[in-house]
Length: 313
Image (cartoon, rainbow, N blue to C red; front, side, top):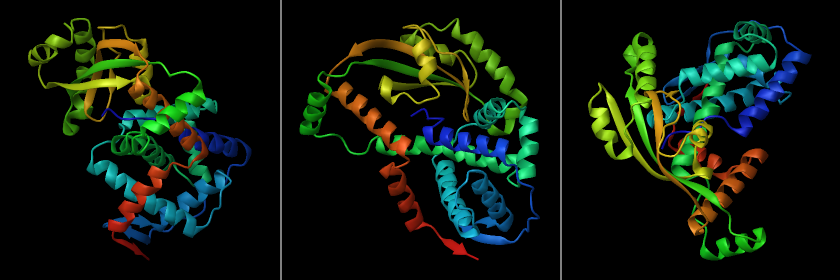
């Protein structure tokens, strides 16, 4: 679907890094440029490993070359899968996250970059880490629906008895309007396309005429997202959807595809079994992310590793 950005795990990691940067900046050491591992023909350099060792040290985690290399192998596999299914967050999303992190430490992004360079991490390494942490949940959500296999009827009954009442949530029917921006033209036309998307929102005729409306403009597509409940809304779209009026549109958002907004075709409060399962799944996923123990994360990664060609140097 339309992806998730931002996770509790990323927030925890960034908070830990923030504390470490303020308390104990580390002077960068010289980095070599050999190859530490090759993952499906993608090299991981010894310089990459050195940067990850520095990053682990800042987070007060075990910081040795073996641990760093293993993390980078896993991240490389995730990055390759993210690219394969085209579910990466945009560069703008990563830059915005980096800027928020810098601001939380009372620094500009440029100042934060210098601090990371001094610590031996580099801004680029940290941004690569952010990109994977923000994009990977999209794949988990798309593949496992945010919670693995469906609950049995008995599990639902048990959970509802525990909660004393059947959960209520909002059900949305959505369409996604995409002002397509080819990667080769992104720098040249992105701002123009954003202006076009913004202008079109005030003229949007409603969901029934959405495709005809899109046909009057160049390189605009419409996707029917169907029924989506509040617990299943991706983190980056959820506040925009909740602020939008019924039969209205959300604010625009820059994505890897171009510039997008969502049309709210209909919404209503629901409390059926499907809604209850969505709420319970969201609760379970939140607990799993908070504890850092999402079984689907390991399951997916183990599958990727079983098929990968990993050459340790």
